[in-house]
Length: 75
Image (cartoon, rainbow, N blue to C red; front, side):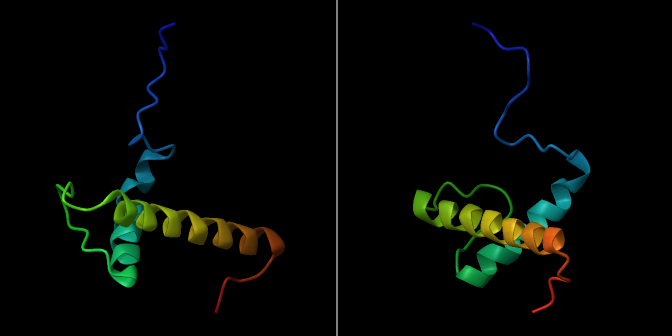
């Protein structure tokens, strides 16, 4: 069955957030020691790439939970 929706893995729900997400990704990679660079990163392992994405999700969830609970998110 063919699907008409554009559900590519690089599609942003909010396209205006793309640059902020890219900066966030680079920040996380730098903090956890993954040598992520602009452009091609096919030389990185799945584990390295997954650790960046996993940490991004963990932090986004934490921030949202803090917002929902009324905390300022200051550490």
